[in-house]
Length: 213
Image 1: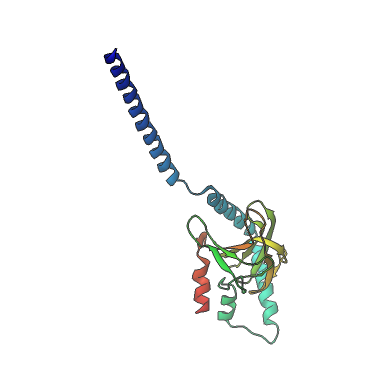
Image 2: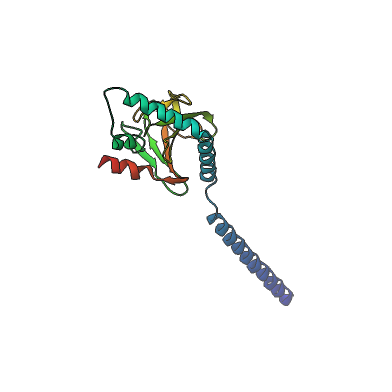
């Protein structure tokens, strides 16, 4: 009887050890797989930006005509900007929020932009001059504005409350195009601001800090 109990205990112990080994192997595989997968929200966010910027840039010839007309109007009066002034006007190095704000999320590979927390209704300005494309009530970004700057740069302004810009219009650098909100996938009032240059996202503060020096 004692031998039988001993055998049963040994068998149960072996089964327990095998189960534990299997559990830890599966856990390790799951953690390894998880580490290789980007955040679902971040991946969806980047795919969405790619799609929106493509939609905003399908009419290149139209953009050239708008730019030519705009520069002609600017140069027709007494103000004659030099080439440096014109070039700088289209570089997105202006902070879109001039009032008090807090950086709630920094730029990273998984978050291709910066989140600037600010009070609801804070004015949002165009970081550079360009043609406007408005996407209202986007599932992720809520009220979203994309501006094409004619030089490889695109800027993105997401989660807006009010939108003052109109699709197809030209925005001047520093012009108020909307207000901070919490539309779309958002937990509080903030501006999601992204800059894309030649199909690559860059940290907006790389340009903004250089401009403030």
